Length: 173
Image 1 (cartoon, rainbow, N blue to C red):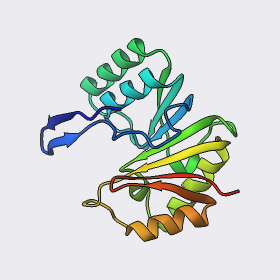
Image 2: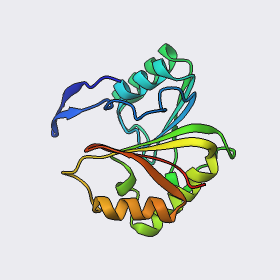
Image 3: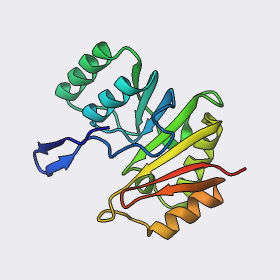
């Protein structure tokens, strides 16, 4: 993957794409990106590298500019869908995805009970050989890294790879 930075008014320069993939992620075909927000560059990069990508966010695009950019992106990338959806209420069929991405969004779902509920839903929609990729910034984590690992573990996931910017997890065997 690539990293790209853009100036966003009121936020300054922000990262809008992804770090290098964890081992095994690049071969996954069906990806769910939870908390995609306005990360059009990241969504486009995923659509170029995977067969089918769905980006969800709890909040809809509120400005006409964002709605227009999303429409342009889904026209450019027909394998990409974007939906307004809460991670705690995923409506996809079981085993729909090979990979799930939380990019700086897992700890913004709510408290521990909300995160566990979302992770249970993710576990249902993730196929048995799938991977969860939790990308974070150590500067904006609402929970300690150890607490995030505990929540993942108690929800049936095992951390198989860790860097300074992400955790890669699989379903516990």
